Structures are given as structure tokens and as C-alpha cells.
Amino acid sequence: MSQHTKKIGVFVDVQNIYYTTRDVFGRSFNYRTLWQFLSSKGDIVLANAYAIDNNDESQKKFQNALRHIGFNIRLKPYIQRTDGSSKGDWDVGIAIDMLQQSSSLDRIFLLSGDGDFDLLVEAMQNKHRVPVEVYGVSALTADSLKQAASCFHPITESLLI
Image (cartoon, rainbow, N blue to C red; front, side):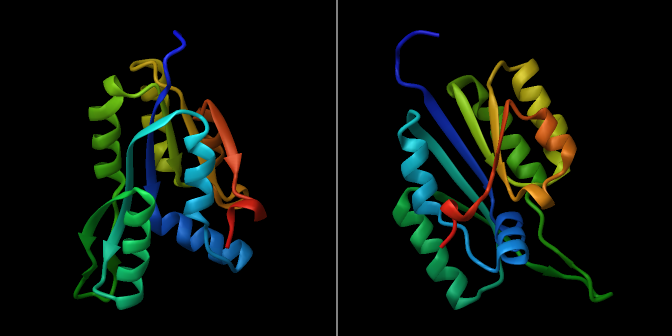
């Protein structure tokens, strides 16, 4: 690879990161610290945070804070089914965005522990030749995703608020 600045894409599964850091650490993820660290690795040309919109005021403040850092916020409505279950899932949207952006990125950072992304990560690296590094809470990140990633970064205290 030439000496040009690496073009970085960041894709955040907000719900996954929120619940896994809360469940394991009882704390929140520090997106600003992550941004500062990733900025030292190259030029962040795309940063999408995928979230569910349930029209909650504290969630809107959080989303505004992410925008201020530099993230694009992608929202889907929260769906409450008649049987009482709920739906709010960005897996396909994240996959489509990563695949569409693959030709313009030198490196991808995916924040999620969801094993459903393992095939996507493999395809990005093998077919599109873009390394994908994954950040997740180790105890709650699928082994298949850890193995598929070019590098797995466990979320630790240094990335928490």
C-alpha cells in the first residue's frame, strides 16, 4: 500500500454496543475516545451509527452528541408487534452500506458483537480486499465474528465513560 493516508470507514451497531457494555460493565461506551484513537490511524471518511428511533428525549441527546463527534446517524423506527415482541435491527442496512462503500475505503472498523456479521466481514476481506477490524465486548462477541475479523479489539475500561 502506498504512503497515502488510509481512508477509514466506521460502522456502529449502536444497540449492540449499548446493551453489551451496559450488561458487562454497567457503563456506557465512549465514542469520543474511539474517534480520537481511530483518527490517529487515518482519515475517517465515513462514520455511520445505526440506531433505533423510539422517540426518547435522552436518546435524541445521545444522537446529537454522536453527530457532534462526526457520526452520521441512521435511524429506523422502533416496531412493537401485536404479539408484544419488538423489532429494531440494522444488520442488512449495515451490510449494504459496507458493501457499497468498500471500493472507497482502505480499512473498516465495525462495532458490534453480532455473529450475523461474520460472513459480511469475510466477504469484505476476501472479495473486496478491505481489512475489517471489530470492536466488541469480548464475553458477548460471537467467536465466529472474532475469527472473521482481521483484528478483534475487546472493549475495555479505557473505552468506557
